[in-house]
Length: 311
Length: 127
Image 1 (cartoon, rainbow over the protein chains, first blue to last red):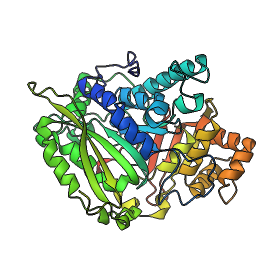
Image 2 (tube, chains in turn orange, green):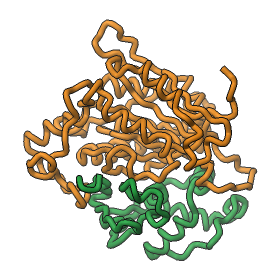
Image 3 (cartoon, each protein chain N blue to C red):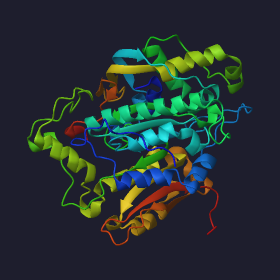
């Protein structure tokens, strides 16, 4: 078991508190099958080879990991602090986005703290860990680049994201909350063209709004997730994958079937289609709580190359 | 926000994505700070392989750092030039943008940065 990052500093009246869904993501991303997938899919550039092809058409080297809607930052902090163990090497770049500026601050703090703690453990244990089988370079934390205030992955360069993780607002609700400034209320802090900081104490109405943003998924709980899924062919690199959490009411079976019917040939922005690529979607983690109203699962979405005709 | 971040960002306006002028975003009126981070040569090499050198070069120049060579050094060169690697480490991973703005070269939209957090939420008329 890898340590769960400390989020005790996070103001839970303004930012979603880590819960069963967050912990399912941590367990899934650190499960043997996903560690094996991530470390084989994103192996580091070998120190002895010297050929460098254009990084934009076919990224190589360090994977870029983006968590969308990072909330408290528990997942981003976990991925960054444990990069060496999850990917088999510490050459991992991480970023996070959230629309809630308090979540952006919380994520930055949670991640910085978790990495400092991990770095400390690495140094005190010398070049090998307790099991004596990891070198310092392999096991260290990755590099956390930025906490961005953004809608989903909208500011990212097409074809740039290698691993996208999303714990969406998935609860079915009559609608998703409209932005504060669109309903006549006072604009949220730093709204419009302003910056991300400047945290004054928010009013009760804004607290309710921020809470709704974290869970209200609209129709079938899929309004926000569908927008994210639609952006995947553009934002993911050819080797990229996404981990998306869903609950039973999201009809994950239908979603997986729909993704498998996506035409990988249409993603001409990164030439993925020229290689017999096809889209894959598999459940790689689940909370198995069938009797409860909320059975959760995590779907991994990625392109597979050169296997047309295989079943 | 570390400088390396700028290598992966573009304008959030959908219509700008297809325009070469929207990448990289142009930093303006920025306040920078330095935060030390452990230097790991093997990881640094992998970070460099991941980035767009021409865009990094433009960003470094606009921020007033020493001009980078036109061509990205080869992995071999870098492995033999620890000083160069450490300079790039300092620029890309230790230097942070604390405040300022990022401007799209296509539509001119300005994204504010406060307390290290850039705001990419668009006003409703641009969504």
